[in-house]
Length: 167
Image (tube, rainbow, N blue to C red; front, side, top):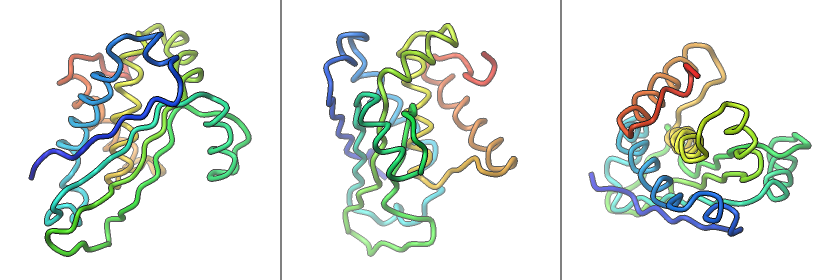
């Protein structure tokens, strides 16, 4: 199975101004998460092509998305909008839009500062987290959370980042 097409959209220059090379961090993290977690989504096995969109935006946009889609009246760090579920089947050879991962700049910067880690490391973590959500991973129950956190840690350590759950 080949790599997915990853589209990265910067809705604000803040990302690249704050962290030169952030596009490469996002791309590497998305590809690594997809490679590690793609088998969890059977619909991808026969797909001709898979696409993922990562949107890097600001807290104002995240606030609106979080309020509209989750009923939470505040910005957040990452939102995932999967387009395929685990029980769906996709005919062989059909392209699949896996979904969108949206990242909120100001919240992520604040969190990185509070956790005393580089923005690039925090971004890589939340991209991995978001892409795993697109692949059907979740953390609503303890067993699911442990499985997802373990996979996130493995992926991030292979990319050269510290385990985010030990910080």
